[in-house]
Amino acid sequence: MFSLILYQPEIPPNTGNIIRLCANTGTALHLVRPLGFELDERRLRRAGLDYREFASVSVHDDLAACREALGRPRLFAFSTRGTRRYDGVRYEPGDALLFGPETRGLPDAVLASLDESCRLRLPMATVSGNRSLNLSNAAAVALFEAWRQQDFAGGA
Image 1 (cartoon, rainbow, N blue to C red):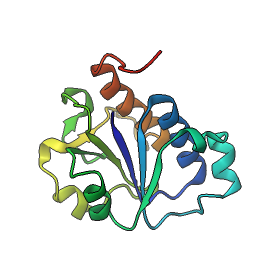
Image 2: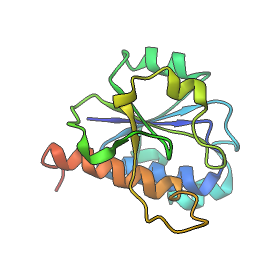
Image 3: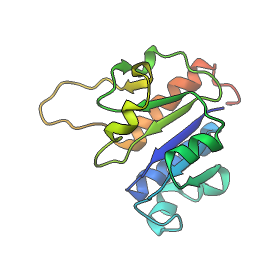
């Protein structure tokens, strides 16, 4: 129903957790190179608890190739620099949710290539020193909101 795109993910356990998330929500996962790990890495398998066989996972050389392979869906980028709250969007089947690398987030050029209304953020407490949510947690929050809006179609 949805696609989740990880742009240059760096940390194997995060991607493993997201593979498990995608397997349990019927979401296609797309990884954009370069990856900070090998897909057969032990830490990735352990975090994903061997859910890879239940998830659709594709790897693309760049974001343009990924978008083209997906048929150029509506794309929502999640960033601490987003200007719109994630729950203010009406998600539709086929939408793609884009997340950046753990240590630096999405590059300015990627964010600038999208309309401001497609640059989303998750609210966080304004506590000094907070950076952002863990990638797999942020992906879960966003994906479950999109799926909730579809009345959890296909879920048990």
